[in-house]
Image (cartoon, rainbow, N blue to C red):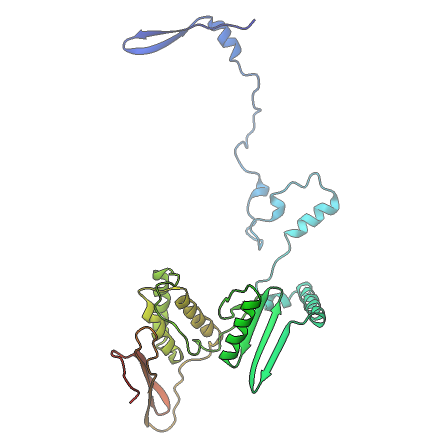
Length: 311
């Protein structure tokens, strides 16, 4: 038979009080049946879980796993995992004999596969060269004639389901540098159908490029182009900025150099395209001025009015 409790509520001095009958049974049933043992370090983490500040990895893997039930060979293997470091660059990897050997084996495997599978296709027709490289499901197309490339891409898109990813940036983990700051005959414009991007980030990048153009005249034109879309940038505009950054990364040696040539002759050059902007059909003018063979002033700017002729 179970114990039965009767609880009654009594109103006293505007408050509620509870009285229970058979309190002896309550005191007997509420006594704890188990008590935790005394432990001085209760609530403190074990020393093995603290970070090893002297190690390259501050949190070695062997600090977070239990090795008590593993055999000796397995324990040795797990501890060795914490000693393995991954190089951050090819130069660093070549300094390690084991990584160098692994890289050589991978290159030999690639060469072996290239002997059995055709991955490079070339077409040469009246001086027009086009090359197509295939690796798994990636295709690279390079050329010396734009029309031939467009014809090939159109043909391939009809035969296969393809997506144009734009200019080549990375291939097989290798960053491809840009040899020019902007694509020839580019078609950058304002298009409401294009995917927008973060305007503040774009403005920050272009603002820094404008400042850098004070000592890098080779990017003066392209910076003047991308700065025209500060109010409403889109993905193609950001891709153009990324190309400038890749170009700058691959050409750190370029810049201004002033030398003593023994004369102070002033020479200037100027030119302009005609209706180069496909948005408003306005032309872009640019000029360079040399003093004593040294470049001192330069500018690239879109004209304020539309030119009706090249005269």
